[in-house]
Structures are given as structure tokens and as C-alpha cells.
Amino acid sequence: MVMTHFSHLRQLLLLQPKFLSSQPRRLRSPPPTFLRSLMGSSSSFSSKLLFRQLFENDSSTFTYLLADVSHPDKPALLIDPVDKTVDRDLKLIDELGLKLIYAMNTHVHADHVTGTGLLKTKLPGVKSVISKASGSKADLFLEPGDRVSIGDIYLEVRATPGHTAGCVTYVTGEEADQPQPRMAFTGDAVLIRGCGRTDFQGGSSDQLYESVHSQIFTLPKDTLIYPAHDYKGFEVSTVGEEMQHNPRLTKDKETFKTIMSNLNLSYPKMIDVAVPANMVCGLQDVPSQAN
Image (tube, rainbow, N blue to C red; front, side):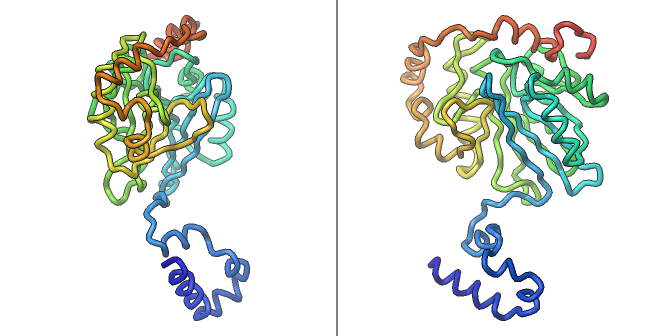
């Protein structure tokens, strides 16, 4: 079947001499997206979306940058920024010519201080965003079913408590004009081949199990999962992969609860600093910045 596609590609190229003469380099190595489309793949993102996955080493945190580059203003948002990498993120945003609108968190983190407050001080007009259930300070509070839009791209808010009481997952839209396959930014609710702990900050293994199975595992199986952290060198998974291979969340609920109650994890080293700061948008020293 693959050979048939490549033969067809060769015939198409041979029938277009003007294309070949004006762009000879493309003959030898056709664009990967072109080859994927010929082979029936649906794994290409919408041309509207600019997407970057960024990493902070100390806390193994992923920060995600999304922008609608088809819009004249190129509006953008950041998910789970870290205070230590704010300057890096702002430099990238400036280089790409984007306009940062929202700095968002999936939950009140216990292992690092959020960068939302610093971003607000360095880029006036940026709005900090978090779930209403988190109890944290922010400019905008989200509830299940809300949408956060940048240009023509939006994220749907799904409540996924269990790691903390205020956890949410941000999911791209299902319509054809939205990025496909869909993308789920799961925070600590689903990690790649794991999940967040449930032994503090209002955590509940029973609630986390229900959240994941009702709000994340009901998404299309090709939905891309982008977690808030990774400790094993993984960058992305899918709903289908985690439903099949996640060593915790594939179990029945009672087995899952037993696993979670026997993790014997150490006390998070940053929790006494991070949680109080993150409750005021990461600006514990100047809480007036978090309205």
C-alpha cells in the first residue's frame, strides 16, 4: 500500500515540470506533511495554530505556548508557566511576534512557583487565569464548560479534580476548524504512564479516578495528551495509549485507590513555598498584582 502511494506521488511530480524546475530541492524530499496526507493520516495540526512545548528542569514542568497565527494580532496564551523561565518565554513570544493575552494554570502547583504573576508585571494587560474551585487569586476564574479563546482557537474547560480540588484540563475544540487531532492539557490529572499524587491539597484518589475516566478518557482516542510534568523523558501521549498502557489508570477503581494509598512519596520539597505563593498568583511579596 505504501509503495502504491509513493508511485502515485512520483507520477504527480513528473507531470508538473514547472514545479520541479522552480523548486528542485523538494523533489528529493517531499514535505513530510504532504507524504502523511497521501498516506491517509489525520495527524496534522490546523495551520492556524502555533504550538510550542517548553520545559523547566528543576521541577520537570512543561509550559505550553499556543497562538492563533492566522489572526492579525497573533493572540497567544501560556499554560502552566514557571517563574524561573518567564524571561525565556517572553523572549520566545517576542521573537515569534505574538501578543500574550492569557497566563493560565491547570491547578495550584506544589512543586514550583507559577510565572503568571511575573508575566503580568512584565507585560501589562496579560490576564492570569485559573479555576474558580482552586481558591487562588487571578484575574479570570473558570468553571466547567467555559471557553478560553485566542483568535479563532479556543480551549474548553473540563473539571478534573483529584490531584487537587481545583484541577482542570484544557481541551481544544472538536470542530473541523479547530486543531486536529484534539489536544488535552491535563495538568497532573494524567501524566504519561502515570497520574498526580492525591495525598494533599484536597486530593482524592476516588475523585481523580472518576475525573479521568469521565472527562479525559471519553475524548477521541487520538486526542494528544500534554501533561504538566514528565520525569521519564516523555513529551506527549494519546488518550488511547493511556487507556491501554497507564499502569495506574487502567486498573479498576479499588485497585487504583490501593496503588495511590501505597505510593509512600516524600513530602514535596517546594510545597511550603510554592502553594502560598501560587494562591496569590505567584506574587506572595506583592499580592496587589493578583487582582
